[in-house]
Length: 400
Image (cartoon, rainbow, N blue to C red; front, side, top):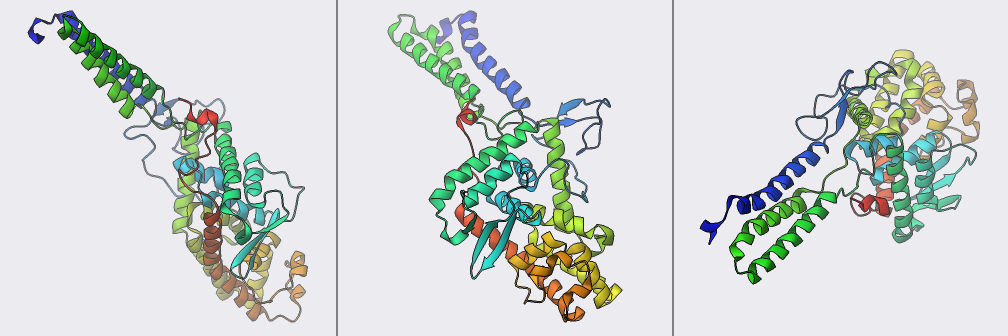
């Protein structure tokens, strides 16, 4: 009878349950992100200045206020910043990488009817491992492909390899201690062992004469095991460096999502265009950013006059990389000769083209760039699985 149970027999059931609860609490605490405590959130301590860290609280990741950041995250790329924000590599990260490579002259993106062509134009540029993998995911060894001719099945495996490369990159940078999508299932496995122990205790209870004394142990093992199996799996936490990278990415995303034309400084316009567009794609705010750039050019026209503003546009905002990207994604109506793009710094190179007409074409091109980038991203998204369909986990990811 239950009334005949001794204190030790009752404790024999409570101890495994208590150990399971304490173990679960310990591991869930250590699955919170780390943050640096001696610097402003998003900053990384200088060498020798102190790098004390702490777990975030409350919640599992930094949830405090994030100030707008007016330049791209440090030591990152659009794909890596997109991945560290939520720990997942999305299809838009591939799109952002291709846009970034186009601005750097590595690939050419061009619209062909309702389809898009990606062409490798410079094979000598040194690329990061994840950039090579993501470029290979689209090209697959070819020098030029039309997205509409690619089969989703053949791209899926290459996309998985690209995902792995991005996840490996965020680990190599010290943003995560291991794969962000690791199942972290050691506790769940331990819970299964406890449940099996409860089954053994139940069998012993059925065959023993004093079967009631096995009931507390079986109940404690079963409840403890069920808790660990139900709640034992958990996320891979970011390191303090990873939290800083995430906060920087969120700050830049906030700036891009709320940027206004009057915030763009004339002398930095070229650099801002180069950094803004790929990150805008990664963060899903490309239409807004393209619209802001068009407004900035229009404001320059009002302030400088058509010819001077055109000189500003071609000298700063539309350097060859940006010009090729815009002209590939948006029809500029033949206002410029692409063969002379290297001479865009001199308005006289435009021949008989009217500054008014040329500048209007450029502004219209930027205004159409947002929808073009969204359409291009949609074409990429149709090819690659997103989210949890393939999470880039190799054998080591499903470890515990």
